[in-house]
Length: 241
Ligand code: ZN
Image 1 (tube, rainbow, N blue to C red):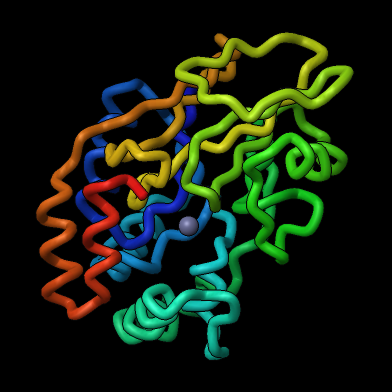
Image 2: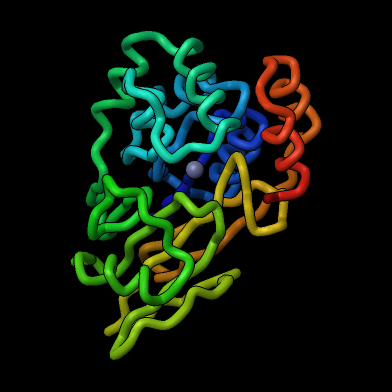
């Protein structure tokens, strides 16, 4: 079984389309989504319709939570908060209910998916370092857990100790080790590489491969500007920041 694992789409339709085409080309028969389908980008409704229509396992991201709810977003900068309000108005009541009802973590096949961390997923902690990964590993009962939220594709490995996070073009899994792997971001990469990112997980071959793909950044940027969303949200797509 080959899974495409996608995260942090952030209403970027151009990024999502390119990734979904590649998932097919890569021979993936299944897809799982780690949340933040909406927020920041100009196509929340289109991206949500695609993801809902695919009927795949999806977990809730912080943007999904805030855009789904009616409360003021906490801990968001002005640009992000403005995007939350704008995005809410693009979605139907039913879309927002769907976002609200997403779970924080899920088991899929033989692995786990979560947006942030397994220890306290609703607190939206960011994992950039071993110590942060170690807390999540404590709650990880499967050999592999995929996560998102930072938009930076890093892998953490635990055997007698926790190692990482490192960039990983390809991980070959070994028995006796656990893996906590960030799959990067489809719609707003932040590792300095503007290409859309996602992972192909081959369960039989025990490999986790990071894919990076060029997409039409200029169109995604133009739509953000046309929607009157903050300029910074358009600019960062070209920078991968
Ligand atoms: Zn995100």
